[in-house]
Image (cartoon, rainbow, N blue to C red):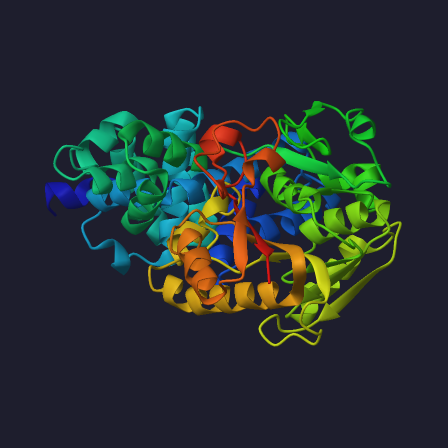
Length: 475
């Protein structure tokens, strides 16, 4: 008998069940929904958190659990491009060959390592336990190996390794550092008009968690009422805006529950207010929101119209979104109507309205703070699909307003192909129109450019990057 065969065998380690971590499991489930179903995190996460709060026992969420889960989901999505570049340096295969569920666990782990104050050993340990629960022990070993490599440096160190130098490739450098697709960096840079400082500030602002902003709907609620909520402060620009500086659950606020107030970015409020305040000659009785879903601007416009004895028609092509508009407008103090109709083939007669808002479908590049996953879904060719629709809707808006009335063309995108290019092309076809200077209609708001149109910016105004052009029909 050999010496080796006489040695006693070490007893096998007993199998240990993986430890379930409800917070990280929920974050993983949210990321999978975003990836598999093309869902948006701001729609997926709230019901998951609500269900977790309703549970009994150790998996029941408290406020800290909900806050951590929210940070893990949104932080991972915002920094996805940067984290992908780092993970790619730590695996022995192209990233496209890593199974998406494994990549989600790795990304969650990298965010904990490089984007939070969670200690490195805890971030790795928690991620490996998550992998054991949702992926199995075999792939958990792979996750462990990759994250241990990532843990050898901090975020700045990794960026220095994976991002090309700015002097060699400015757009690719910014794309990796600030986690935006290169084409989006290029488009935003063009919209800003050049300069490194501005684009860096904008890209950084896209990666910050936005405050929750409420709107007090006129005649139904006041800003003073909402200021009674915890950590509530006045909005920067809109008299109806209140910001919740510590987040919180707006759905728990009585005025929001009752529909007297809503969640609405201040840029969106400013667009509606500007249209409502443009001087018009003659009657001012019929207003139109031609792309009204999901109803935030329509609810504010309807309330403002009611104060003046005017009536709002809110039109939305998709029936389910028209239902959301009806819900938002329910309880409005004055008359209104909601219909499901195609804005390019309207059922109303030309020249019917005194004021028309056309907030057209777009790439949504102005709201990347709120929908970080949108930056990875959009492609340059999407502009080819939106462009004809945007032009058709603006032509409808101009046809729908009477002589002397005003159209507001709005997008939640600063991309020049969706803003000035659309307006310029349509006005060439509609010579009996003129642009109205929108800047005086946003009183107190600084840095609005040379006009007559207005572009808001997250890094300058603290709003989504809303665009607005006001057009008067002259004949």
